[in-house]
Image (cartoon, rainbow, N blue to C red; front, side):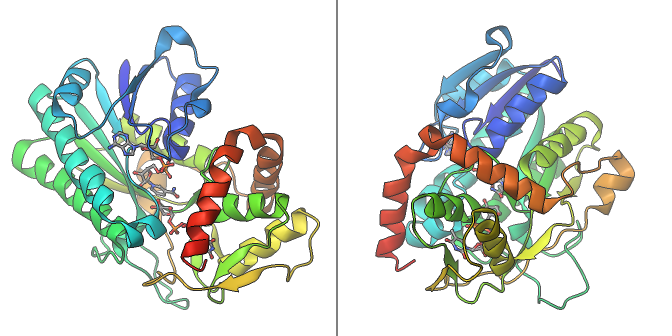
Length: 332
Ligand code: NAD
Ligand code: TDX
């Protein structure tokens, strides 16, 4: 694993992986990122110049992708349109980037015989009832709910087909909800933290009973590195850290650590088609590849994340007003 091509490396989880992989391996990394509204070069500061290169470009640009894939050993594919709410209002970019972009990358990886790791989400499996004793496993049937999750599911199926039909040397991982520093203020946890900083009450969709299975972004990165190093070609691995919490509990935790009363939030219009619960069984990754998460204390992780947003206002401030204006139009 000498040269990695990381797509979407200026986004939340991709940039975390770039920092993590440079710190924990001897690899050199090229990031390919379009710098959409979600990409931020400030998330990639302070990296060693001799081991890191940034290329601004689109994963749908087949000539550019061909050249970059030819020059690397492993492609780690994070680039995506990633926000469910956006996909409900303007699905087209999700089809372009998540489907055509993935297709463009796997065609280049197949042509040049390169190792490929595809980053995906637990949302491809649809949702669970609150009292369902089962969690998602690698054998759970696909049943996506939103334009976002259906395009991620489509991209996973393309990768699986390229493995079977063309012998693509690929692995796939489906991870649960990530939290931590450098997450865009459109997403649930940073939106509420920065709202409180701005004196705005947190906004809970519906009654806040929906459950998400939270994992720290660093644990996602260590899992991806483990799969790249030890994963079996053609295999899918679910990544999760046993972090189930409902949205109301998360908002109350944020309010507690920001010195606000527990009920200082607003209930707003629910997301159409809102998935009720996600829960990951990551037994395969733990038993077969020996991976373990390190961030087991969610409350401590939230406190650290609040501190990061307080200390790094310059990073998120430019996106805040525009993001809230969009939510206001939607009544959220
Ligand atoms: P993000 O929206 O923060 O970042 C996406 C990045 O991709 C941005 O830097 C953007 O500029 C780039 N990008 C978008 N379209 C592009 C294109 N056409 N060409 C090149 N670059 C492009 O997303 P994220 O939350 O960091 O998610 C990264 C990946 O992880 C996605 O594939 C997502 O489906 C997956 N994932 C996310 C979560 C989560 O909780 N956020 C959980 C599981 C899986
Ligand atoms: O203001 C809000 N209020 C609220 O109650 C927002 C923005 C969200 N929510 C709810 C909706 C979800 O139940 O919080 C939960 C989390 O919402 P998001 O941060 O939008 O994440 P989610 O839709 O669960 O998807 C995330 O995890 C899986 C990522 O955005 C995806 O990229 C990833 O695949």
